[in-house]
Image (cartoon, rainbow, N blue to C red; front, side):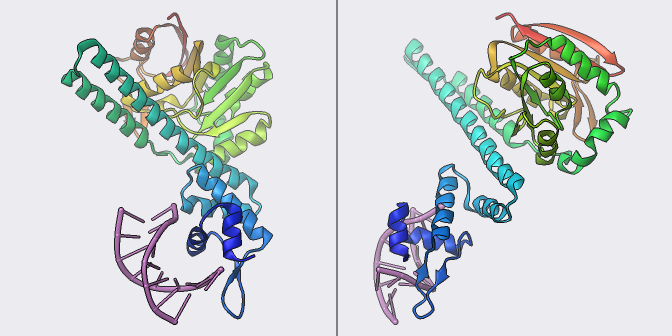
Length: 332
DNA sequence: CTTCTCACA
DNA sequence: TGTGAGGA
C-alpha cells in the first residue's frame, strides 16, 4: 500500500505520515527502484496506535517511547506511559476546571455589581496562578523509584523514619472502620501496605503514588487493587468518587502551601460525607518543622485548625513518638 | 503519484 | 506539531 492510500484509510495527510517517519515513530519499507514507501498491515496498525495516542494528547516524543516499550512487549512500561499521560491530562483538566470556576466567579460579580471589582479579580487571578505553580513545582525529590525495591524492608527496620509503622497502619484501619463495599483512596500508597489491610476488610481500594516502581510492586502484591500514577496536588480521579481518603507517612513531603492544596484535592475527590485519615510524623508546635531533605513534618494543631475551618470534626491521637493520626469527618 | 527540502506558524 | 510550495 502506498502513502496516499494509507493516508486515506487513516484519515490523516500523507504529509503527517512522512513527518512521523522523520521523527522515528515508524519505518515503512521503501521500494527499491523509486524509494516509494510501502505500508504493510503492521505499519497501518502502528500508525493507528500513534493516532490514538496523539488523540489523547501525548507528545510525539512520549509516543515514541511508548511504542518502543510496546515493541519490546514490556507491558508494564507501556502501562506506565499511558498512566503518565493520564496524569498529565488530569493536571490539565484541573487547571481548566479552575479557570472555569474563576470565570463563573467573575460572571457572578458582574451580575451583582454591574462591574468587575478590580482588587478582587486581581487577588483571584493571583490565587489561581499560585495554585498552578504549586502543582507544576511538584518534583520527586526523594527518588522513590530507586527505593521501591527496599521499601517493604525499610518500613519495618527504619526505627527513625518509620518508627511505629505497623501500629500506625492498624490504628488507621481501626479509626476508618470501613464498611465492606466502600471505596477508598490511599495517597502515596507505596507498595500498598495500608491499602492491603483495607482490602482485606472488603473495601475497594485505589492507590495513588508518584513512583511507577512502587506501583509495580503494589500491583504485584495486591492484584485486584486499582493503582494510578499521580500525587497529592492533582489526584487522578473525578470528583466525589470515594467514601474516604487515607494517607500514611507521605503527607510530610508537602510544603506548607501544598498541604492546603492537598486537603482541597482530597475534599474534591470525596463524596460529600467523605472522611479523611492522615497518619504521619507530626510536630506539636504551631509551625511545620522543616527538617530539610524535602521533609516538612506537619504541625498537628494547625492541621486540625485547617480541617475544622473547612467544616470537619476532627479526632486525633499519638501513636508513638512523633507519629500521630488525624481523622476528620465533614459536618458541612 | 511520489520524493525531498525549505520556509512558516 | 505539523503544513504548503515547488522542483525532480
